[in-house]
Amino acid sequence: MTRQTIEPASTRRTGLARGGAWLDQQPYLLLSLTSLFWAINIVLARYVAGHVPPLTLTCLRWFGTCALLLPFAWPHLKNDWHKIARQWPLMLMLSATGFALNNALSYWALHYTQALNALLIQSSGPLFVAIWSLALFGARLTRAQLIGITISLLGVLTIVLRGNVAALGEVELNRGDLMFAGALLAFGLYSALMPRRPQTHQLSFLTIGTGLGGLMLLPFAIWEIANGAVVHFDAVTLGTLIYVIVFASALAYLFYNRGLALIGPNRAAPFFHLVPVFGSAMAILFLGEQMRLFHIVGYMMVLAGVIIASRQQRPPARLDA
Image (tube, rainbow, N blue to C red; front, side, top):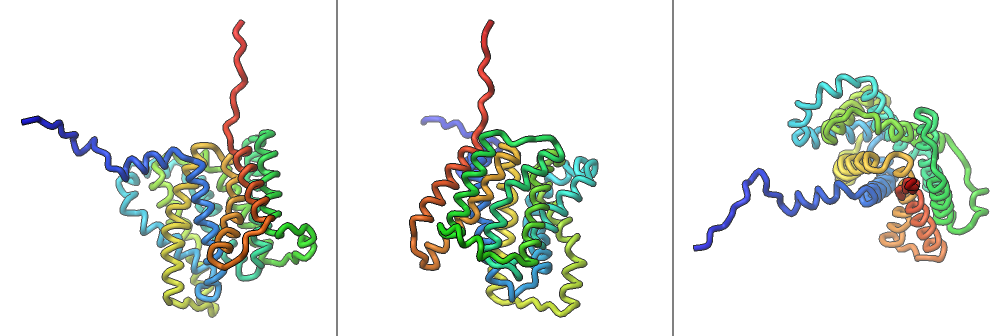
């Protein structure tokens, strides 16, 4: 009878585990999925604007994400707590900019601004990351990054303006636009600071960060409800919260943070431009909008720009003496 060598349980890897390990090393796919999840989140946030007040929605989002991640993060938290405690001020700054302030302002802004305005401002995201990286750490954009960001930005404008440059003159700015710009300014700072974050397991960092973000927003959510805001706990609200917690928060931030760790803030930032691309594609697929030439041109420009800006720069060739 043939003897079989049985691999110990501790060293066996399931197909799911192997798939997760492969995905963990694919920054471009991770960042693309992040943009997809956030594009859907913008659509949902606009749709449920009358169901959940913005500060309360953001507070519930981060407390829910923290609760979802905590059972998985607990073994790592016990080992990582001292690392987080050593960099507590930085952790508070990352929580404030990446979770509390950024999302509260963006949800609030969507109560006042139009989708066109939000998408136009969203396209400036890579510039905010570049400005913070330069101001704080002297990290300049490479020529390829600058060219790629410019091309992808033009592609975004082609899609959002539907190929009509004159539509820029019809855009009217309002306080929602300032809020949305403030949200991107905060998230740009978060992205620039992320390479300096405490060197912990991803789950430890995200669980603590979302928990702190929820705590920061709790007084504002209480104030919002005390001043007459009403939460409608219906099927729409429940479904939105489930999506926001699982996909737009837990998975999107795990993917985004990992993408940043693999290729850095300036190379990751152009993937912001995929958000309006996915948004317009969803309008074509689910809302019956027709595919037009400006869609194709815009998609190609964004894709080309992202590829150019995010590619690894080759080190200069060595000349042997």
